[in-house]
Image 1: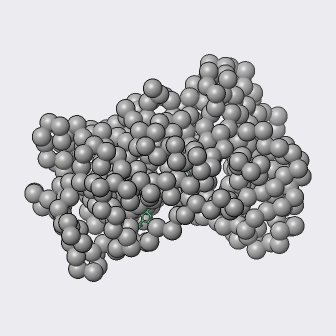
Image 2 (image 1 turned 180 degrees about the vertical axis):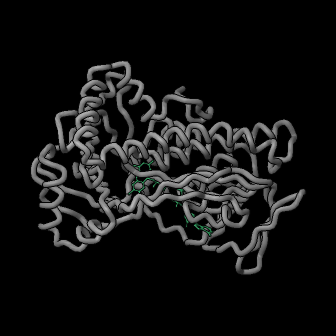
Image 3 (image 1 turned 45 degrees about the vertical axis):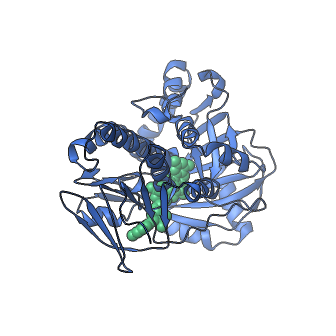
Length: 404
Ligand SMILES: Cc1cc2nc3c(=O)[nH]c(=O)nc-3n(C[C@H](O)[C@H](O)[C@H](O)COP(=O)(O)OP(=O)(O)OC[C@H]3O[C@@H](n4cnc5c(N)ncnc54)[C@H](O)[C@@H]3O)c2cc1C
């Protein structure tokens, strides 16, 4: 390692950390990005990744501003123009249509590996960025002048600011002792790619069942990407089934809007939790993405929230730098937390309430939620407002996320 002194060190080169590092570099800062794992996200045109993200229009704008959207969309994305959400136990459903909100599409389903590989290519090409991976950080020391990150190899680097983008078990967060109250949902999300007899018609579908939500998200090859949240013990049973039994259990849970479910890829499952750091910043440290908050995937917002954090932090730090302020000073960092915390808490609370509302079998609640769905479906203004929040077009957005 030749260079030792940077403006910013980002720990974690997932989607959010990579976006943060690129944004900082594009604002003229010298950046080191460190990841404990060697990045292995190469794009394979013949293989579809099991992990996908529903990407909002706000995230699309962030990627455009980082100069990576052309590469992402040129590789493989599936725009979706409609959403259909319904309840297994009743008559209520809601549909969203991009035309109703004056947009050509609601968002995109993108494989995580497509996003990662585009971001990592851009990291490697930037002369402002040193990409240090695989490198496990061993110690973080913060003083009034700078933060020093010492690797397990014994090498060290300095910066004014360290960004923790190292996911929900964040090492950075633990080093500075920021609490991260966590509630397990007691659920796991099963993911797989499913072949169906009917076309998906650019529609993201989600059925709420008493076990948890089942989402089928459109992919560019006509398959659907499954995200099926179920109690953890049930996930273990479903993962262990043969393909035929798995598809028949899924067909029962999801119904027939996509016709027959005829083939499934390999499957994987992820533990689900709700967590939120009490603070996003401390002296010379800021947390972004899952390091700061973790949310149920039912609304497809986790990485979108993280990308908004990244854009807000870059904006806040760049403004501080323009005013010749110390970028690691708490008074410079606090506006970032103010810009993001309210939005993230609101999103997390809404998603947690939805999850609770739909898991119950209480007949009164079931009746009320179906009535609520029907009422919402008939109130275009309310429905459009929900759609605009889901697309990331509402709220106090950082500049990089705004519609041009
Ligand atoms: C099934 C499922 C479906 C989802 N669907 C959606 C969706 O549709 N839309 C959406 O917006 N979100 C979705 N999410 C949420 C989304 O995947 C996460 O919010 C997002 O991946 C978090 O990104 P991140 O970069 O903050 O963290 P991570 O992806 O966890 O990346 C953390 C990085 O830090 C590195 N790291 C970890 N520890 C260290 C260390 N000690 N030192 C150095 N590096 C370290 C890791 O190697 C990794 O590269 C979904 C989640 C699940 C589980």
